[in-house]
Image (cartoon, rainbow, N blue to C red; front, side, top):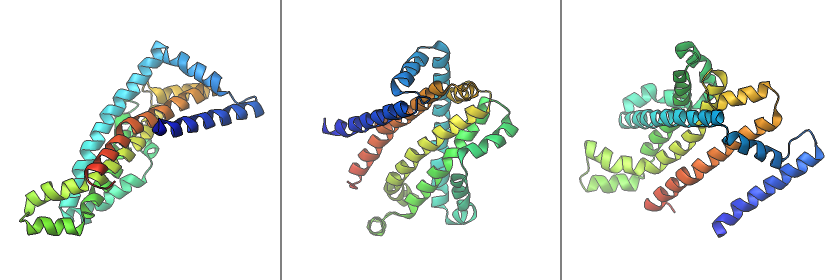
Length: 246
């Protein structure tokens, strides 16, 4: 109950501030109205199709981010020469916002689902690469010396000492990559013809339906908070406890 008390208090405070704002500015929809619209949308078959389409694309795109980000991060962390040549590529990918990749994705793949997946990949893989490389570089010197004293060398040293020691940093990168990928997904769907929550945002914005727009934004925020809290926050805490960081 203590763990639930603070989130409940935060939600109650936000609800109160939202309600007061709607009283002061009548044109601003109140929370009860927005929640009512959101509930109605969730029961709409067309909206459900868009929601599951976005979820499927996010699952595919994020899987690609994990594979490419961790794979390339381990590679540049393992090979110093490759890191010197292409290490800045990961930083550059991380620095470019996900939405900035959408025009390039459309030029290459057209207004298709592949363009959205490409946007997720390039919008989120950079942070995973950087975090993985950083984790490899920041292995405590005491761990390195202890492993080498015990005879760990070469590939075994890298896979059984360096990589496990870098996992906390890798998990941090995966958690951030989820948020970046979710935003890149919305940007990709918003600017392409792919059916999803992003396209729904575009439709209600063009129709100037403020209450429906706020309902969709609330849903996006709720999905992000729930996934982060139920998956990544627990994973991060479990890893930190296992690695003795808490």
